Amino acid sequence: MTTYNWDLIERLLHEVQNGAGHSFAPRSYAEDYAAEKAAAGEPIENLDHLKTIACEYEQKLLLRGYIEPRGDDEGSTGNNFSLTPRGSSLLSLIDSSIPGNDHPRQVLDEQEDALDEATFDRVASKAQIA
Image (cartoon, rainbow, N blue to C red; front, side, top):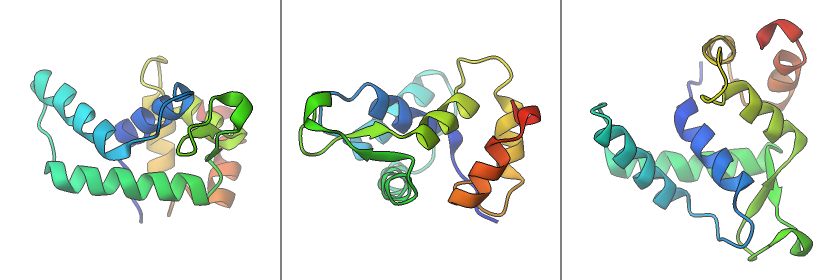
């Protein structure tokens, strides 16, 4: 069973969402994420490992249709992305600013691979997940 760091994925998706005119930098976002966790007194993973995972997530999110290259008319830098409808759906399910996001994350964690396209689309289409 594949497990994901939903907080880090959420961070990456928010950066994509707000990334017009800025190059996407997953390693830098992982550093910021770790610094915020440390400042809050939470334990952090090995930073190098976290940076590697962030880059792997970028690739997976792109290849599986959660993000796509940003168009020139949307503030493309040649190295940034925009959310696809699937990516927007994922962000709405795991967004920590939305009350009750723990249940969707739990349901996603129960899947063999929650970011598999067919699995995610099936799970996200169920009204009771949210």
